[in-house]
Length: 252
Ligand SMILES: Nc1ncnc2c1ncn2[C@@H]1O[C@H](COP(=O)(O)OP(=O)(O)OP(=O)(O)O)[C@@H](O)[C@H]1O
Ligand SMILES: [Mg+2]
Image 1: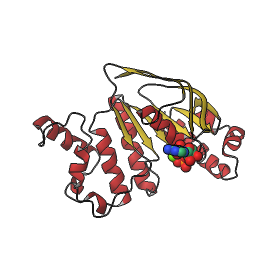
Image 2: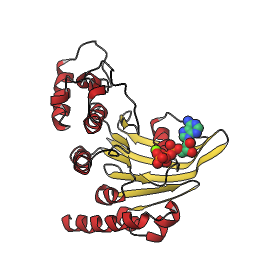
Image 3: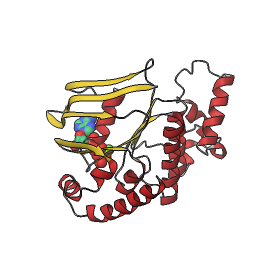
Image 4: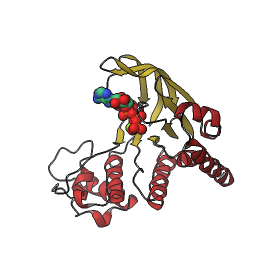
């Protein structure tokens, strides 16, 4: 269980070029938190900072919980050779945090079964990972992240390339994990309607600037979105967003 996620004055650059500058924000624990912004804004970089894969040049990162927080991560793109000789089931078990023995313990087997049922990956168990469709592969990646029983789940555009039905299904799964198990979810998405439907808080990021706010407020501020995205398609996205926000308001 996490208690606090807070970033203070983070700065990250590559080869002298600044990507994130003096970035401070907090993530409400046990909620869905979205990171949005144009290509190249530094969204994936920020997730890698949270994972400890990139060390910021300045700033402080606080992720506090009972014991060492477990993080599950589904990266933006993970090219896999079609011939990779690893079955989906074995790929999922790679996510286990304490998998020391060459065989699975009874507890691990039961965890695997539960996660595969939950992510609807049972019938993929024996299929080589490289032969799965894009949508099937995403469910397997999610299963691999979930089998660790993470306190914090990081998703980098994990529904991009999925058909609308599969996108909805995946987000519903993630939403259930958040609600039922109190997992804090940070997801990156370019689909503002999806963000409006599922996110509680949003961090809007562009090179050198950022703003954090409640999803409904921030996503209905057309001027703000136009300023950050700096191009036209925001209008169409905005329309979908508003419809979705209205739909969501009806559910609550
Ligand atoms: N390891 C690296 N070395 C050098 N530059 C990098 C590295 N990682 C990222 N960058 C640069 O940092 C900037 C931000 O990249 P990042 O992948 O975080 O963007 P993003 O917001 O995730 O974009 P997208 O929406 O396209 O996925 C880009 O200009 C990218 O080229
Ligand atoms: Mg990215």
